Length: 319
Image 1 (tube, rainbow, N blue to C red):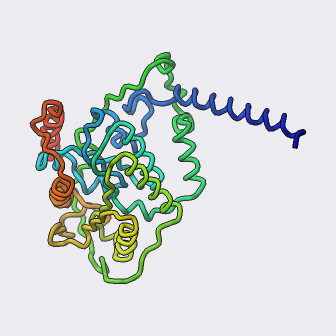
Image 2 (cartoon, helix red, strand yellow):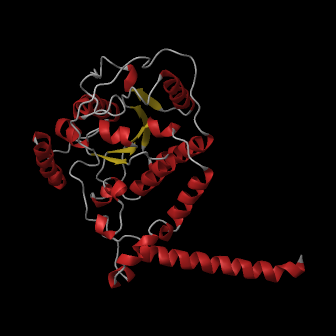
Image 3 (cartoon, helix red, strand yellow):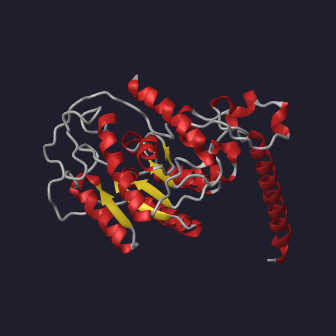
């Protein structure tokens, strides 16, 4: 054992120096702004728009994949209810990225509620992808290694200064219509769909993050004939009960959210279109405000930019 001590000491020193080097290079390569020109990818640009929002100004944070950004409109909730919300949603978002966006947002915001759209909970991924994501969270040079082409002198000493904000707050407006079949949709069953083990562990990490930050985690399943079924509903309901969480499945609430599957979907039931999102948002906005006593900030001095964004949002809707 004594013979191995020098080797162990040298190995420990090497690993310490390597970590220090990676951390230093990671700060250099990290985008100092959240604009696309600073290295933020197209798929994550809108989700990273939350970094440009005033710190501790977001009441409701929404995490999830395209089901979330197709179904929930923060500017409609602002218009109707006056509380702030933001969607940190990306296409086909794996749950380890849901965790990353949640952790990133909680570093700058103190939402009262975190809404997790449940479709991503059933999206499997490999252990290698999960471990690589955690490594990228620790050493951002692994995520932004392509930025070497765009590095400038400012990157060596410039502080983080996020200036990009999205007028739609992460929502993706899409008025297209492609009718869906409802054959077999939400047929009764006692079966529970399986949540992959890695996803279950990631869910527990997200739950711990929310509890540590003082936010309440709300599970929401938005309407989708292609992605949702009764077996998935049963499994999420069981998870929610086990972890003392509130779960809202809008697929089981046709009276409260009367989706017309001939008119309210843009791609035959995979995602809602704008008309469907209006119905989901109207119900969810009322529920959130009543259940969590969210404030009406529309006349508050520090939120004039939201009213300006609302004008631009209305112009987008008008075409």
